[in-house]
Image (tube, rainbow, N blue to C red; front, side):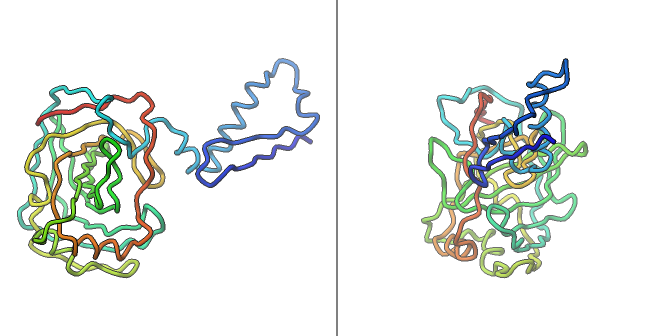
Length: 264
């Protein structure tokens, strides 16, 4: 009987080393060895979906290097957000980059229109530090605004949050002053103005990427705002105290993807 063994370099390795037992090289006539290796590779990907995702070519987040950016006018982004809505704020309690505080919005509370297509705001959540970088630099905190169209296509905006202000961000403070501290703990925030968590200027970097948590699904439309929102040191430290091991995914290779910068 032919046996196959594999050695994992690490839990995040993308390289799989295979050993074929003696006798396996004697394949039936007309069956090329390359075909067998092809089948073996996809069998491993099916058993280990996370490793397969890490081997995909359009993953997020990325380091946005200006040398890779094309400045080109892109379709207008139009945000229609509620100025007073209810949030269900929950501590997800998951490990690693999946641990966060997530604010689920009411249906119809917000949407963004791009290229005559509406993407509806589902939730927003936070990562420390920010997941995307610009020129190798991150901010202490990043916020992801997750939108979904009726055809299930995802559009996610990352807003960088910069600490250092002595004045608290009044809208975010409705969440941060009483963050749910324990896994699966939740609370309701009323009268939240979603417009206050968008940067004043809507210039953005845009590219196609993936979810940054399992299953790392690709085909996600990313909007990354270079302008930052300022929060107080106390607000930042309050969030970081809940996630001392951080909750961001590592930077992924660009793999030749196009990044566009638009002033609107």
